[in-house]
Length: 155
Image (cartoon, rainbow, N blue to C red; front, top):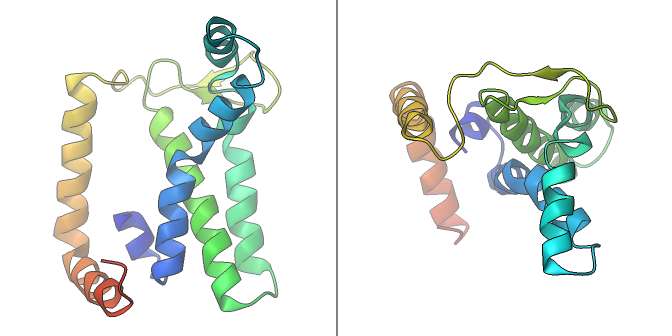
């Protein structure tokens, strides 16, 4: 959310960025829900998770396309926010040992910075550092956005 603030997205764009930040995993969960049994669903999820939905190209294309499109400012900020949120999710998944695919429909070749494992203490420390840095650099923007969200009744 603080990164969306740095882009000066309006409240709708920030909400879309929050939705986009979980969308790659939600899409994987929905796709795995096509399996008939709960055990089969988990196996399908484990097989497809961090596959095509976690390829950064889709999210860059959505963000760039939204910024270049001749659409209403509200639609533009929503689509840009969604793309930016998805891209931030994928970039953070690159920090894990499993990483993300280099190509959308191939399991060969993954990009991983191997900084921390999902759910580990290192991940929470990394998150705390990111939040602290964002607050340090963006606190005025965050406070201004909180005022705008309060004005719109969203906070």
